[in-house]
Structure formats: structure tokens, C-alpha cells
Length: 143
Image (cartoon, rainbow, N blue to C red; front, side, top):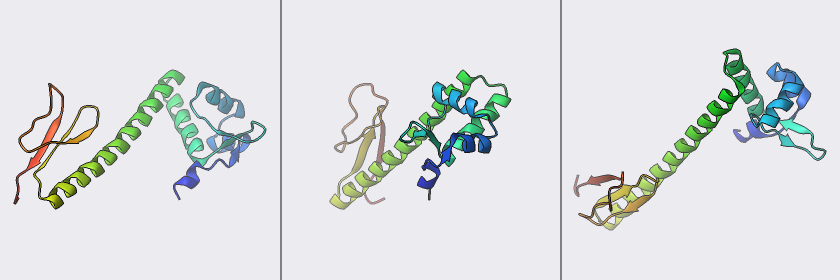
């Protein structure tokens, strides 16, 4: 299961061994926010398989000469890309639902996706307001 990779199971000594690092390095990365392990009752860090994979990636980037600040920025951008991909999936589902609803109602299939990511239905012949960066998708009836 995908969620098993996120389950916190490794104590710091095991995670450090799996990542081929010193436990103090893991503590430093935690303080810097590069990896955020779960905390158990007595504040003991617990690392998941995903955390260990992140540690290995940090180590690889570090060996390639990337600074810790650079690594933090790379990871932030990768998280942003993942969030954007998720949002694209959500918007695609919304577009599909709108298209299906319009088709079922026998309406023209006109909607706009705004620059903020919102999807709105437009009446036939209506244009998006203002000078937005909206994209209008339209398919004539019967095609």
C-alpha cells in the first residue's frame, strides 16, 4: 500500500543506518526542516520509508555539491510540482464533470478555466470577464 511508505516505523539509529548517515546528521536535517519525522510519546523521532528515501535524496544532492539551502529549495519546488499535478488532476475531474453535466442537459459545452485555477461555466456566446488569462474550451453540438 502507498500509505505504508508513510507509516513511521524506524527509530533514528535504524533510519540513519538505512540512509548511510550519522544519527546527528538526521537530527540536523530535522532542525533544518529538510525531513520531518513523526514524534512518539517521549519526543522520540520515528522515520517512515518515505523519510528514508528523502534522506537518501538529500545525501545524493549533497554529494553532487548542492548546498543545504539549495537542497531545501529543490525539495520545496518538488513539493510544489506535486501539489500542482494534484490540482491539475482535480481540475481535469471538474472539467469532465462539467462536460458530462452539460452534455446530459443538452447544453453547449462552454466553460472557462481561470488563471487562479477555478473552473466556471459560461453561457453560450459569453466570454470570460476582463483581461484574464482564461482558457475557453468549446465543442459544437453534434460533433
